[in-house]
Length: 598
Image (cartoon, rainbow, N blue to C red; front, top):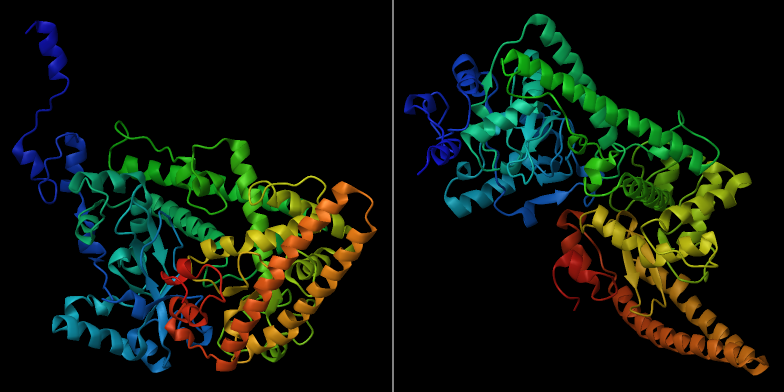
């Protein structure tokens, strides 16, 4: 082998003493790290000694004990309890359950609940039955409900730490550390810095972030001035991330849709969006700058400025309003902006449906009707003189033609008119339609804005709803079938034993008569037609109408059968179980229940 070949091969080898590996917890063969980096483990105090890192529990049966918070009655959920004792005394059944979730920093990801009624009596009994003792799977109970710093156990990307408010029980997937209050910000800043992932890769090169691994991260004391800066940076980062997370319906603390923010409000949706987009851009820039400053302080404190940079990439700024994070880095800037605008308008449509159902109100922040069996009367007791009155029966038809004046499309138009005034209604509907056609649906030549919105409602809204609510929908789509002769949304929390009967008498039977009348009109139009092309078009429409009439008649028979049963629901059973009670009256049954409709 030549001298040049020997030199080239030497570049691919590292020399390291076995004693050097002993400096790193677990003594991994991390031959690639520098002496200076290894020294951090010697100089620092293991995080475990300052902020105990703890493995979370497992329920042993998530389908039985765990729910999305939107599935159950809101009046049975306990938020912000500071101790197990207070939670037990409340008599409530469901409590926030931290399961980890997607890559997200600073704040967010809380959407799950666990049945912890009477100190988890049912969960404990189940674990005892399976394992002989509940402590086999239900660990670290004394840390339940305490404020924490949490991360996702498994990641396909990187390490992300989040602040968790008091009131949570934590799962294995949401293992957590519990720093003392005076140390919380500096520990949060360290774990949110670029150093934490490098330390974790050293002690465990996989992307499984075990509590023991996180507990081994070395903590070096900061100077008082640096500590104060980190306090301020972390407080601001959490506040911005909390604001972002709470702008979406899946947040426990969702208040109102951000396009309706009075501080940004204009008389046109397009102007509102422009103002909101600028605000989101500033939030994203601010978080990115916070992360750079945070990285810089810790890199210098650990003496690693010659080995690491303080850069913070835009795709790791984990705000939902940041399209680089939300949609990935492989798309062009123009495509990212297109997706964000389209999705924001889709979310506006969803919020409008919520206002129609009485879940939300333009007059009062937060949830209004979100518990089983509540009615319009309950809404009016909370909002006595609403600007926008919810639908009387929470049954909203989604039809490809305007058969009912109170269908979802017309009600959306009324919503837009109420919020942004009648003066600019057409311009606002145009912007909504154009935004939906950016990505949600394809544009059609010659179609009016309301027709485009109707087409989105009829063909795409429910698919988006299923995705947003993770296949646990709160607005259920009753459908006659493939021909879409009749479809309607029903709000789960306003469903009652007479809902199906009302659906039949107020909508399905009248629609059958309307289709018959319309078929007669088309026959007359054919007789009067003098154009071959026009006649063929009318004949095609009649053929479609014939199929719809047959489908509607079959649906009516099934609907009558189920209406006579006066089916009741217990929301504690969850959407997956309850959705299967209606046979094939509902759309997308297999997606929701995992089984074909029977």
